[in-house]
Image 1: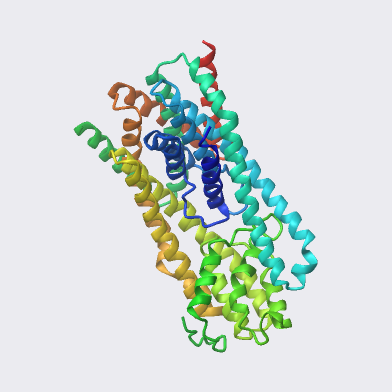
Image 2: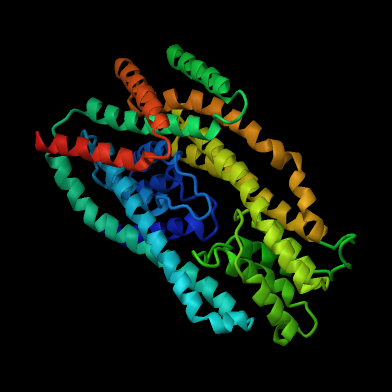
Length: 225
Length: 260
């Protein structure tokens, strides 16, 4: 548990990146889970969790006011949990991905709350904002940024604190084999990625043929190994 | 950056490099106070504010306060392309364009900047870069290579778009709409989407193979079952979110593993 504070700080920074600042996509699972895993002692395990989550995250596009999962803090939690289990045992990947998905879902709900909170704050400061107060405009922006970072830090800390013991206990009673466990998670992630790729790209002329061409190339590379 | 004389506006004063740096840095936090009422409105005011200080009388003047109130009202756009609005609105305010024209212009910008940005960035550039990162993993790269390839590639586009937006907004002012006809913005999403589709085709089997430790028989089952499941998901499009379905299925799988 010595890693809790650095994890919470990392989750705060990466959670902030999702919407508020600077949207460099360090909050994508590919990056966030790898960093979470690295902090917990195993960057490679973090990357494996991150790649699996990234396949799933392809389906969620952060359009405008739409509601979406919060991948930044969640991926830190998932990558860190899978890495902190310090095991090659079956189920570690499955549990890490599950923890991240659950946290991402809750994180999406907290994003909605922070947005409602900022709207409430803006209403309270309406007279100053309407009067063109520089302090009110900058203050609201800083309050939003701070609130979002605190939200993401708390989410990461609580997520890790609650889910890590559950993950340890679950892994202790895990009965299915490694191949089946990995196979199931990878199937689910690949299915979501495949559907997302179709949904996003099918309207581009000829995209399906590009996909098929890529698939043939990918399978050919696999066959040559 | 100096203001070019636009047919629609008088020349704007020259802004210092420090002011531009201030504005550009602020655009990175443009969604810092995003909410369901004014959306990114306060963010626009926050970004334009360093330029508004150049209004006659400075921050204490009524002109500054009125302009800041106007710029902090409801606004919605893609966060990266909102820099086009920031540049153009700063230029309009400093050029003495009437309040009525600025408000009409501001309202008219929302739709195009939102839809162009969503198509180019969220639905094309981000998935493409993400898939390139996944492909690196599938080809056996280390965590550092995967992460840095993704981040560098993505942010080349990201920062270029924000900087271009600010530049074009400032130089073209109220005539900036014509810049949205730029071939990169119009045709870019189609080309990037095709490249992303091809990358997805290559990446998915390679990623699955590495995640499964190259068990050939298992890989066949995984790819076959995920293809069928993907088709079902496509048929259910809009009725179920992929990540929620994955969450439920993996949770049930974990429960089965623990219970038996």
